[in-house]
Image (spheres, rainbow, N blue to C red):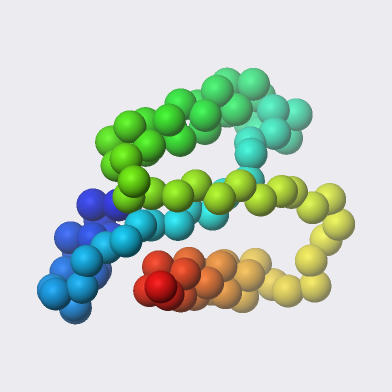
Length: 93
């Protein structure tokens, strides 16, 4: 994820700008809702540990939370705004 953003997006567009960090927004997997149950929780934790090990100091994992209530926004709009927020946070100093 870090290499993809740094090498394929940032460097081609802004080659002289160093990458401070990638902020990865997520929410903890919940075994009772995941298709693979507790294995999903374990897999997510291992993935986060691997990201920290491979990219020390280059990735910040920000954990949010799940909401049980239904949103008023369509999924496509939520996805777009989440991606836009991610890009803004990557370029803000």
